Image (tube, rainbow over all chains, first blue to last red; front, top):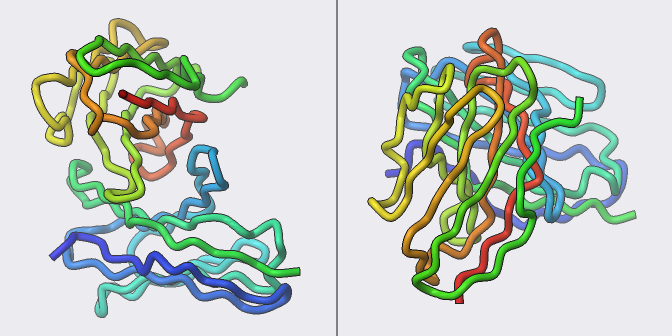
Length: 111
Length: 115
């Protein structure tokens, strides 16, 4: 079993839709949870990160962590064509040397 | 700040040749990471440094790969000899001590094709 599982998609939604992206993990030691966005032929860029459980909101983006279920989500409200990208989740353990990226979910927002 | 700088942006070489990828992290950052990304395997952490010292190289695929960080503003990833299966996009990323592994800034990547 992989440390981090992420559905690769592709996911295609109409503009204005609410998008839900998810990752599951198996290692209960993970403490930091990040979401990166990667446009085609570019490097990943950090969108949001959260520590432990709970929600974090930044504009149209909400990151949610459920440690009891080992499940994290990224919600995008009022999705825009400019949100079309690959979204990668990433996780860090409390010792700092447990670090994994998900394989990424490809999202297309259709105008 | 110019961000993380990587060179070359594209590299095409023949099997058996030595390849050297270069990275300049963001000034003041004390963590530096090397990643490899392919369609099949996604983004893989190869090695990371803290204060120029390698901390975890467990992701380095084999002895053909080596990485150095002679000073805080420069790192290299070398593949010798290169093989077609090394074809991938190689990213360098950096972060500051307060951000640690959580807030990494990625460079634009080097697209490597080994024929």
